[in-house]
Length: 143
Image (cartoon, rainbow, N blue to C red):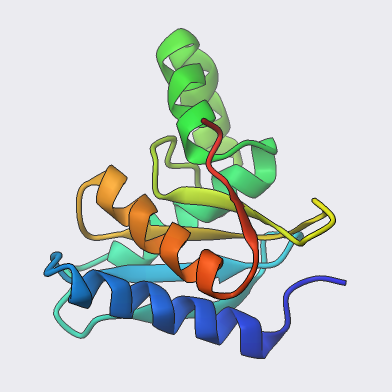
């Protein structure tokens, strides 16, 4: 079974709360199901234009390629032409940096993805990891 709406909303809320707790810049977060469809998209009212779109691109790229953002970043460095090509093909985008994570349940089954944007990529990822830990779910960062 995939993520429920309630789980997705809680993950999104907890991600934003973690950013506030750490004093980070305003964040946007997207929680997608395994088909890349949004379950929850939340943003701090102070985020800049298109922050939510970047969060969606981080999560959607992870779902589309089957890797966490850290692995996508390695592949983007190794194969920039390929990443440029898929970026034009994927309807929700791909942002190959940390801050996009695959979400797995306790059995290791893929149940969705989370994308966070607004801070440095490492800090974005840290907020997603804290929220997923609180939800009892495993984050696959691609590390």
